[in-house]
Image (cartoon, rainbow, N blue to C red; front, side, top):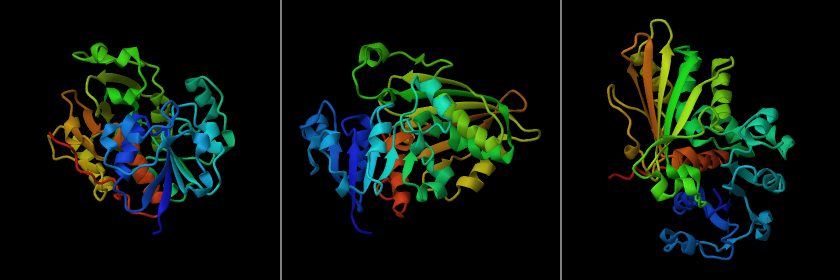
Length: 346
């Protein structure tokens, strides 16, 4: 296909840097505009020295970008700041928004969880929720895709097929999830300084994390009834990676082997979702730097229950990798284009 001219809004953050890394070798997408706020006017290599070998445009403010010449926008701006920016973009531009601004269908729920009314309610009705493996057909024809959060991605990939198949009970789902510190963003915050997080582990956002309504929204759709989960995220002192350990109550007669069989049927041909061999526990280090999600299920010692483990790289499948996967779909390209980097190990 002809060259697609791409803008990355918020290129000076971690997800912005990951987008640059993935698009650097993309055969169809050419980065023609990179924006930053405080870093406007600087070279990308001065913000991220690992970009020194790349020929990239200088960072500019959003109001300096001529969107008439842009075909696609990756919006990696902070939550709450993207609605008015996206609403002002020309109609021909296709958009993948990596913030939470368009993920929740219910505007009242958005107001409750994010503390302010939605500023582009008409646009919200056009947004397609972008968990690629589960929403592929809608994404392919969308103009605006709301890229899922990292925790919701790690949870929905294993749970949605099981709820649709009736293999687990929707009213007894307990999610214990752990993320590397890059999930908190690049802005300086005291609570994620090295000395504050190293050699320790702690829960945060207990019973109040903003990814909970996103998880429940999509699981409710799969189960065809309201689903409320027990969800507790934790911060792990590592740069990237995410592990979700999910405790579920099985449907009568079901075993972990049935969960694995259901996943194999749904995801058997998927390039990025891998059901591991029986008994093998997924590890974050085995997906580091990649767009993969590794999953597995184990019978619990408690009768009638199973333990599900799911791992992703929070910056790739949990953010930028899935964003490129979605944009590929929107332009009729193979989903693996620019996204098939192998994991970094060790």
